[in-house]
Image (cartoon, rainbow, N blue to C red):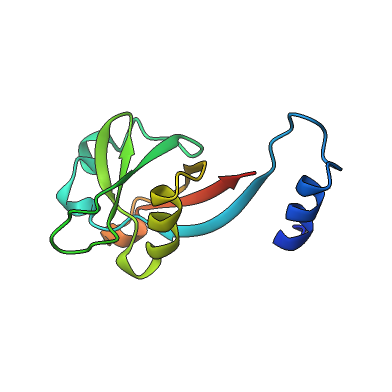
Length: 124
């Protein structure tokens, strides 16, 4: 599958070449879930499915990371966007951008950093 460059997608949107009312979804990043060992992932594991929607919750007052973004599934905290990858997501949330996250991969792995992967999308 080939993706159009972001500049081309923006141009199509701005010039009105996209169908009226059509949303264009751009993949912003794909990340492992950080900190899942401290949350309910083990208890919820059998219920979480690839493609499930995740909520991204900004934690600007987090004492460990001022750019922290918590990841939730059906209101249950699962972990965080990794610190090394959270700047763009935090900025988008702070700016009120329409972003969405989905579970992209599940692995039964002893390493908690490899169990859940998710993707973040920007809707234009």
